[in-house]
Length: 188
Image 1 (tube, rainbow, N blue to C red):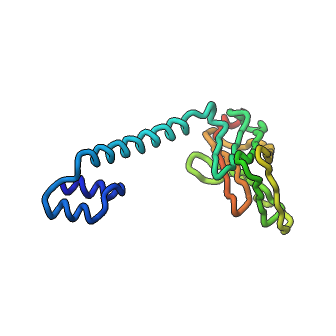
Image 2: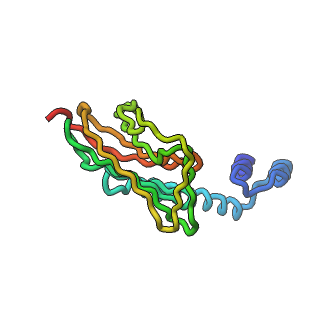
Image 3: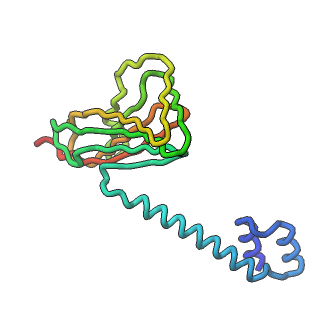
């Protein structure tokens, strides 16, 4: 009986003094409170299940979307399968899905970056590596419904395997990123 009381205490439905009182009297928490706690647990499990199902409903591995605080970021990598010498088009889109205007502040002229990693997570390419970016502060303003889109072409020179491309918004206060996957077939 005390175990149930402690469980209710952990999920915040019973005050600590009630647990001590119930333990001292060797009584249990009313069944109505236990039913409410069980309903809460099932509700949380249902929400987690829906989140997992939604995460698995991408129409393609070549696109991913992340939403955070009224901002949505997506990455596409096309085509989904490339061979050596083929060109992969990578696109990062940042959209203001909220009701308020958003100000994105940048510490340099760099607004985004793309990183390709192999199946082990090792970086094999980074768009911003070796680039020179002006050391100036900058701001991008996104009205509600507004979007910024950044695209780069990558000439594939990768061995066969599955790769992940991650697009990153370079605004330090708004670190948004999304990832997509593609397959390299190697030399043709």
